[in-house]
Structures are given as structure tokens and as C-alpha cells.
Image 1 (spheres, rainbow, N blue to C red):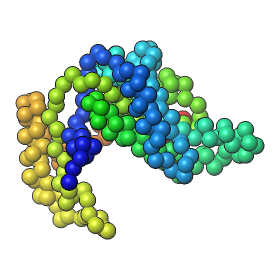
Image 2: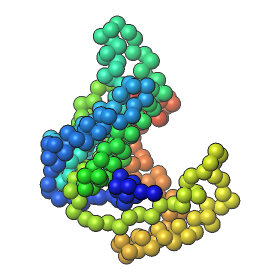
Image 3: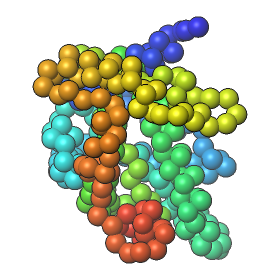
Image 4: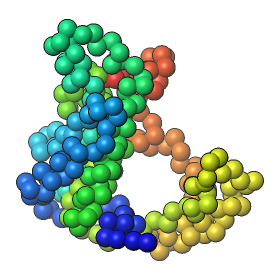
Length: 254
């Protein structure tokens, strides 16, 4: 079963090279309207999306991410922010304490709002023939991003997203089998993931070989060697409280 939307989603691939052709105002407005209409937990609408148009701010975020294509002018850069500040202000203006908004549960609902909005924008952008790439790497230096965006307390930059006109046609990365990543009712345990994923490993190795010819990598080898390496996995953090560990470098989210 398929339709145009499903076909677009199943054809998803990450685009890291863009033409120097910015989105039109109408395209940006459409994508932001899609984000605005995304499902939201408890109707709190705890997400704010920032479109980065200031070259200096963009370069700062690019430097924080460690990825050169994040800076420059190619592709439009958006940052999805978990935002409980706005609701804290509403409560304060009505004489109500905002202490509850400092809870980890509400932070997680704001995080979910931000990620749902980002994915909705990706689906919309790809349906418009545009390319996208998520930028988890902005968390390599969350403090630098927070400062560059002048974020108030009770906010946190969850993920970045580049959207634009693709200047490359990469192959599609193979995904794990449905039998491994989906199940009915209970968790799908297997005796050995290495054995279960042997065919998938060969598929991934062939993908990398055809893409670059210099990288022979299987999925299980990637998991064994790459987790905990790089800016998307490691960021500076301060403090020893559970919140400080869960939300790096931030107090009341930042």
C-alpha cells in the first residue's frame, strides 16, 4: 500500500550538499505553518522554531556543530527549541508559580514537541522536492548554541535542521529488518544480534563500499566502535544532579 506521501517518506535520504539557492518566503512560511500545526503534548505547544538568517549566528552554530556545511549560505538552517519559558511567562503574568515547569517530565514533553515538529517539517519539505539533514551535532557545544540564539531559561536547543535544494544524489542507507525493530505486544528479543543482522551487515558494507570505496563498515561494527564518539554523542556538562547529567551544561534547562 502506498501513496505520494508514503513514497516520499520511504525515499528519505540525508542531504548534506545544497545549492546556493535559499528557500522562498512562501516555502519557509509553509514549513513553519506545518511545524505550528504539529501534535503537541497537553496542548502546551512547548516548541519554538528559529530560522537562522544572520550569517554570524549561523557561523557560530556551524562552529559549535563541528560540521562545515552547517555554516555558510547553502540550505536554510532551523533550530527546534524545547520551550517552557513562554508558558512560565504566561503563568507569571497571571500570578501563578512556574515551579512545576522545571520538572524533567515537562522538559521531556517539550523535547517531544520539538522533535515531532522537526519530523513534520522534514516530511513536508521532502514532499516539496527539498532535501533535509538533521543536525544533532549542535549539542556538541550546547552552551555556544544557547548563547548564539540568546535563549532564555527553561529552553533548550533540541535539534537543528538544514532544508534546501539538493546538490547531491546520495544512495539510500539500508535499514534494519522490520522483524528486528518492530514487534507485537512485547520486546523482540533475539539470541544473537550479530547473527540475526549478518545479512544486514553485508548490505550496509556494500552500501559504504559503493558510496566511497574507502569505508568498509558494517552496522554492528559501527555500533561497537562509534557510539560515544563525536559531537552528537558527547557534549560538555557540569554538575552532578540527575537534571544536570540529563541536560548537559544547563541549569533550569540551560
